[in-house]
Image (cartoon, rainbow, N blue to C red; front, top):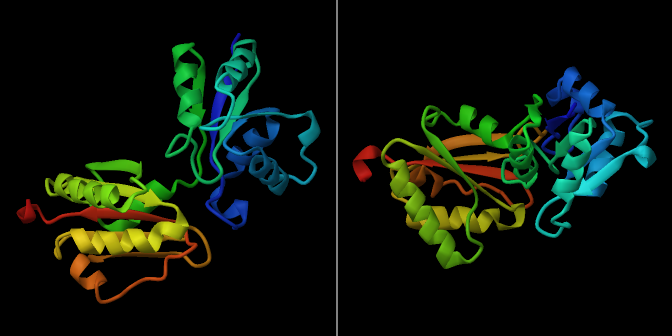
Length: 238
């Protein structure tokens, strides 16, 4: 009988796991000895954060993602097919969102293996529900192009999509947040609403929604702060 694949959430930063990770999620995580992870070092550190006595040396970790061995997802699911349970972990938040964990989930479904998402923090969902923007119609785009011209074009296209009432959600690496903010202000309509959700669940959490015109008067400090960006254009600006 096949085992189960658990999609395991991780805290969004340096915060007490008990504040955002339910006990049931922690218990299932600590019961596993087979993991598909974005980064082995951070996965080991997280497990030891949950329980200092966690048996790291007797646990198998398979890295997944752009630089990992492409056969790893198949090897870990071969073990699950033979009865082992496995966990999938991102470096922060929920696996599968802007994260290679979706590779494992997709292949598990193809093989008829059960996939169970565990409860925990998702920066995308937390930002959306706190933003006041449309939570019935929204789209998440992950990371936008790195080059300035491509990013500006993408932002303008997302604003156009949002003008029909669909919230557009995207993110950036912390060291490029300030540039992202500048480019949003440079290409978006003054009436477009922009939510910036920074340091979600952390001590410095700041979530604010204002029009682009209002943001031009208040420049936030975003460097080195994980952040999610959400935009929703006025429907009259289409």
